[in-house]
Image 1 (tube, one colour):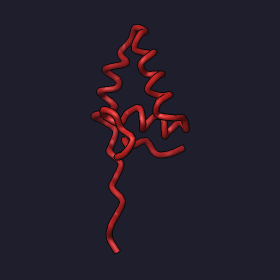
Image 2 (cartoon, rainbow, N blue to C red; image 1 turned 30 degrees about the horizontal axis):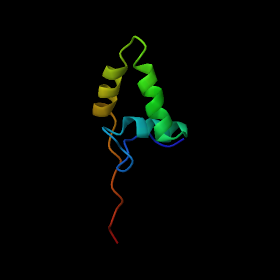
Image 3 (cartoon, one colour; image 1 turned 135 degrees about the vertical axis):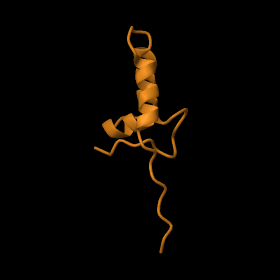
Image 4 (tube, rainbow, N blue to C red; image 1 turned 180 degrees about the vertical axis):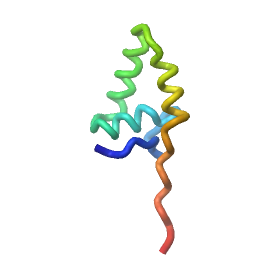
Length: 66
């Protein structure tokens, strides 16, 4: 499993769904669909998304050092 970090590419808003998809080995589109369907259920899904957006580190840029 990959480390949990918001990717620099493949994001739509904050990169949270893309990070979770990479972590669990599924497509980002599938994770976004799961999130949207979960928003139809009662619960703090949107607040959890915002918290993960703030707490997850952004993926580091590739090093260009020689």
